[in-house]
Length: 400
Length: 87
Ligand code: SF4
Ligand code: SF4
Image (cartoon, rainbow over all chains, first blue to last red; front, side, top):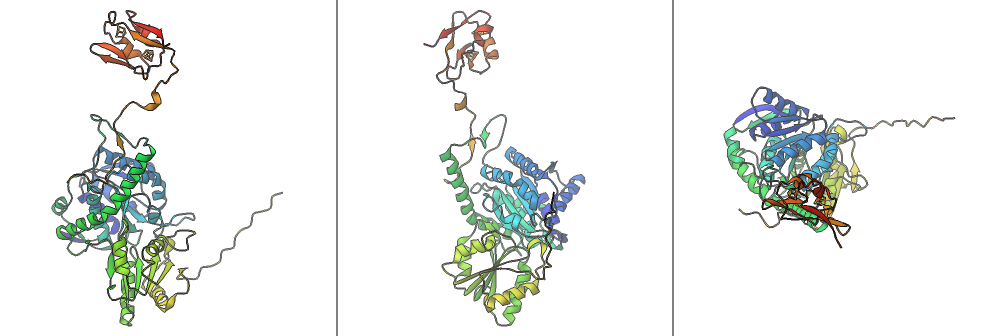
């Protein structure tokens, strides 16, 4: 194992290399592009044997990856924002086919208007597609979760695709210290690829063809059950990962608690701002405010048990969303958390912030947390760290 | 470990489809005279519906899908196939 200063995207590319991925369907989109650039570079140098399939859109990138996976090889792709939305149809097709595939999403705002910066709306909008969905909070976790994703997705008790989210730019382009496992360690951890069926001209099967209503519904239920049962399998694989690869990370739980045990107030969030939030929690703790944090690492499966357990007997819970669920008055995390704990926590508040790359650092988080502890009046607020200038709308020109 | 009970996959084996079934509208059907048939399989090659099935060196007609077009009867070099009225 070596330690290197690399970006999140490089960490993911190294994970793909170490997992001995057979085929990568690629189409570049900011901020994910450097993942595939790194892979192409490694391929050009002969460091990896991965077949890199360059395609003409994200829809095709997922289709090519899907085809390779059906053929029986470990397959990977990466995307972001509009690209993920363009893949949307194929994302459902892969999950419904129950075939193991791994994808990394360098999360980014969705247009219009055009915006290349970070938020989570692209990622969260896929939460009902049947994929296992993990979200990293630093480049190390992006690498670790990518490696675990292959193992989880190829487990015969799961057989579902898995995506790993990673904050665009904040993680994808920022370099930090990352522990890179040796090939032998990864070979010892990742089992040979398994999948429920393969396409093979010698033994033809029909896949994804028309299914009668009851058969279709039975398949839907099997996806739901496999996803919910994956919770224990993720923990089991996480413990093995701690032991065999990264003893410094802790993957024995789906979600991560910070100073929650004795806390009166709890913050719930997902992704890279967890680091700043932990510092903000420390500062408030020094002032004697009993506050803690729960970081959602797995959006799917949603660990109802873990989350209820972590947040029970809290006086109030604040959910931070970096994404939107329009028309609902709060972000997707707020809605999920509220439906999970509304009977055991008297006060649940929500804040939507950090959209489209809006900077939310420790000082902004401290401001939000302080307001929350004082008692936020509204259930959900949209928090802007800066004043937003008013833009004059143009009225249509009169046409004779 | 065996596959768990909840696992279910959207896979099927290739089979004849319900869509190609002829139904009740065919008027004439090909009948093979096995005393004449020499087993050349010309009918098998030319049947547009793939409903001539080679069997034991000769041929058999799959009447569930045969459309009664008569191509087989026309290509048979020894006139072993006659088109007979369904009724
Ligand atoms: S009648 Fe037409 S469809 Fe029927 S077996 Fe002959 S060629 Fe085929
Ligand atoms: S074409 Fe005539 S002779 Fe040849 S296999 Fe068919 S029925 Fe028999």
